[in-house]
Image (tube, rainbow, N blue to C red; front, side, top):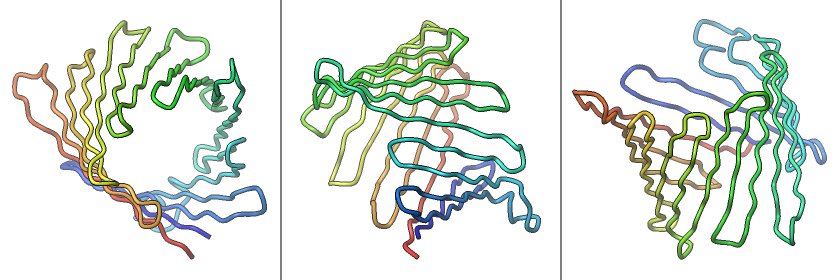
Amino acid sequence: MKASLKGKYDADKTTGIGSLAFNAGDLKLRATMTDATVVAGPSLNGLSLALEKPGSFIVEYNVPKKDVRFQFMNTVRIAEKPLNLTYIHSRLDNRTIVDGSLAIDPANKLSANHMVGTNNCKLKYTYVHGGVATFEPCYDLAKNTWDFAVSRRLYGDDVVKATYQTSSKMLGMEWSRNSKSTGSFKVCASVNLAEEVKTPKLTAETTWNLEI
């Protein structure tokens, strides 16, 4: 059985998410709750239950909203290249998203994300240089705008990342450290360059992983 706790802190509020998962053969059962589940006394607010077969499917039930979300994953090969496909459908808002990524080689990958029935579609190219630096330009067809991300791995588990969204003129910087055994920590700073008073917004996230 595995448990994880995640906390997010910013100037406006502090939030928390906890999850408990255990294996049942090839399947994984998971319960997730937010601080809304326990702060004002035990309730169903923020509670979700999921059944997962890693690499195949996830069925998640949002208890307070009585909503079911289906996610199916599959991998096919095109010209000996792996194409990862993901299908996501939310029953309550009747929204379907199709996501695909094609690994051309270890350094180059093409990705696409499309919301069915709309013109919302994003195309992204990922290039990994020397195994430590990553460049990710992304084109939004609906907005006709570009987003850019550049990241570099430092000292093993440390990663520094810079992002820029041309549509909102939002510039972001991020430092993160990930550990499969203990958890992760992330500090983000963002500023809207379109605002007259450019006040940075700071957030911090930390996740603890526990074996029970």
